[in-house]
Every structure is written in C-alpha cells, then in structure tokens.
Length: 117
Image 1 (spheres, rainbow, N blue to C red):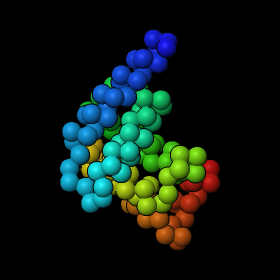
Image 2: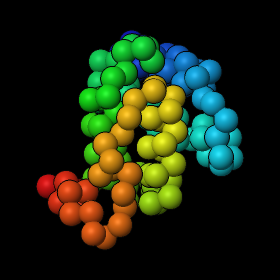
Image 3: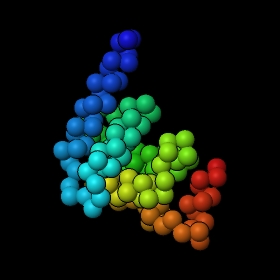
C-alpha cells in the first residue's frame, strides 16, 4: 500500500472516531448513524484538507450536502438517508443548514435547480 493511502486511511478512522464522540442522541439506529458518519468522513478525506472535526465549517457541510444530492444514486443514498445525514452532520458539527436544503418538497425550486447543475 502506498504511503498516501495509509495516511488517508488513518485520517479517515480518526475523523470517524471524532465524529462518533460528538454524536448526540439520534432518533434512528446507531448503525445507520455510523454509516452516515463514515460516508461523511470518506468525503472529507477524499475531497477536503480537513484534519480534524474542529476544522469542519458551514461551507464544508454545504459542499458535502450538495455532493450528496448530486451523487445519491452512485452512493446508494435514498431521500430519507440524505435528510438524516443533513440533520446528523449539522448537529455534530453544530452548524445551521440552509433552509432550502431541509425542504425536499417538489416545490423547492432552489434545491432541484442546484441538483441539476
């Protein structure tokens, strides 16, 4: 295994643990919460320079949610899991998600226009 892969894998597991430690009571299964945290950690390792949870900001969360919306089919994420992920991540890193990202109704033009881009 190459050194870069080992470093990224180590960073991935550290982020998962840090996020798990910050998880408050979730209203769905802890297994599902862990899988969503793992997906978020994988995103952070592959697409950002974030080293620890304290470096995650609102902008990073918005990019992740946009990434989820654009890649939900490839990632195997359904609408319910996307909503859960948004609520979980916003709670863990204590950021407020834009209101248009929380509204998955068909009348939410901003959300669906963002997804089509």
